[in-house]
Image (cartoon, rainbow, N blue to C red):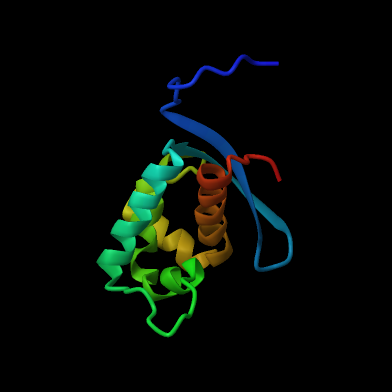
Length: 127
């Protein structure tokens, strides 16, 4: 068992992201994610919400990350670029290629975003 040492944060972490392909098979992308603490992730999301012009709901409706991502679909490439340091695709990691990935394989973009959220807020990297 590894000894835990607080304050010894990694710069990044790797995770293979799995998603359903349109024709029914499974696709995978090995991603190198930027490490953020749970607090830093909260600040990151706050900036996304502000950039999207989203405001807290006055009618008691709960905040929805899915709704936010829906309203900011044009910004999803920016989100992915801000959480990834690299990937194992033959194409370079840049905005044009991330937008193409999200357009051609929307499940891949959603899986990358959800995998990152789960990793930094729940500390889980497993399936």
